[in-house]
Length: 166
Image (cartoon, rainbow, N blue to C red; front, side, top):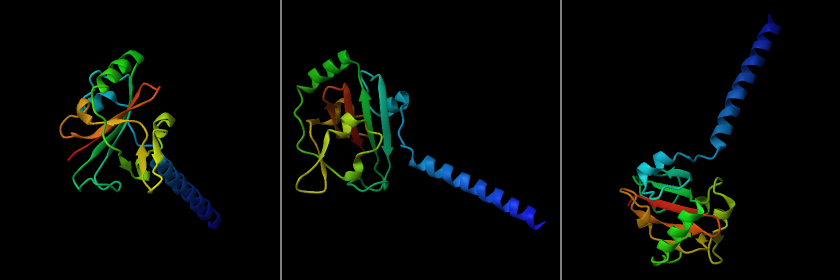
């Protein structure tokens, strides 16, 4: 009987350990979506990109200037070459924003390397700055996500988009 209880205890322990490790693996997975239709409900995508990678940043989920009821979207939009050329022509008519400073935890593991390369640590602080021109969000903004910026990733047909509520 003692041996049976020991076997049962070991099996229960193994099951619990397996469940805990599954939950840990799940929580370490990048939390982003590739659902274009859902993103189109939240932001203006005209023309629509061929691929999207995006994430909602909810209130209190990271440090920053967002208030307790604010939220944001971070998105990487992939366009075909022809559409990207049209977008670049439109952007030439827009004045870029001044330097934007970002906290280190802003850069996500799911960002592609060419996107990550557009951020560099500021030599005078612990913040990151964007190394390419960033523009006001009007091309992509849709209420309530009316504030933020976007930039074009050089030579990659990618647009990085950050929009947030007021």
